[in-house]
Amino acid sequence: MQLSLPIEPSPREHPELRRGARRHVVAGLFAGVGGIERGLTRAGHETALLCELDPAAAAVLEEHFPDIARHDDVRTLRSLPSDLTLLAAGFPCQDLSQAGMTAGIDGARSGLVMEVFRLLRRRRVPWVLLENVPFMLHLGKGRALEVVVSELERLGYRWAYRVVDARAFGLPQRRERVYVVAALDEDPRAVLFADEIGPPPEDEGDQPRNGDSAFGFYWTEGLRGLGWAADAVPTLKGGSSVGIPSPPAIWLPSGSIVTPSIRDAERLQGFPKDWTKPAELVARPGVRWKLVGNAVCVPVAAWIGQRLARPGDAHELPSRGLPIGSPWPRAAWNVGKGRRTAPFSAWPKRSRPRPLLEFLGEPTVPLSYKATAGFYTRARQSSLRFAPGFLAAVRAHMERMGRAAR
Image (tube, rainbow, N blue to C red; front, side, top):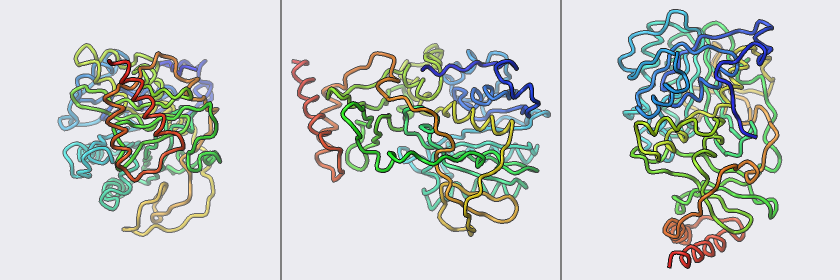
């Protein structure tokens, strides 16, 4: 199943448009390669402005959104379109991610989220959608999220946020992200908390279930973390800023260890294959891994877009107060009566999953001897616990690749 979504949906493709669902006019800041905007368009909304500084990402936007106004540097954007009803921003995560420099919300990149609030002070847009990594809930005792929601509260917004996993939408990628929805006059819980299914039982511990499954991991790790996923790949990473790819590895049932192609990586984010190929006009091909790793998962954005078009009834789960200064949970809100939290899962939906082996549609590449040997050495030195047979498979693959290189 290749996820290929039309850029300009017709009313025939989207019956909700015929039924008078709300259609937002969207500005996408830090648009990257357009994951949020593609998802929102799929739900029937209209993008009026895209703002992206990176030349490689901008080349992708120019190819796929040719008729939409674009701006490069958010710091020089003076104001938002007058007819705007939704401001979307997957603001930079480099200073907030566990894999990054963890400089926090004051970092040069992630601190650019303050430009969002500068623009909102000039024009209070009815709805706001923000996206970032879940590590922001913990880094610096959650200071980044405190800054974000406090700014929203000062501007008069009601807000809700939730951690959502891309696997809930049938993609074999273990990718959790925080989505914040804020509204001036309406209840954002009707968007984020209208759907709740809970994780599947087998998600407990994410251990191997049978001999036919593939397992994804990051070979660049091995001392402090593994980045492991059963029948899926772990979160796709941005990789190097100079175009050095950072694909995950996949342990196949045969014992071989391979890496997926960039075209399958695009599909793992919900894009059609070769979505990021226009980036090669201005950058090295490896930069496509950075663009895909930094992108917002399209089906998740489409789900939020559908709920923005047709809000539902928020699920009633036992909630409790969340005093300022408390640790941030995985879901919370403030609709003007104080901060509260309830045990919403990262699974609002549960689309039919496809096994990772079945999902992969492009040729894979064996993990090189050098990469395998480096990971094996680090893994042996670490105190991490590995799945039964995994390290033996890594060693066997390393020996095969070593013999092939002679």
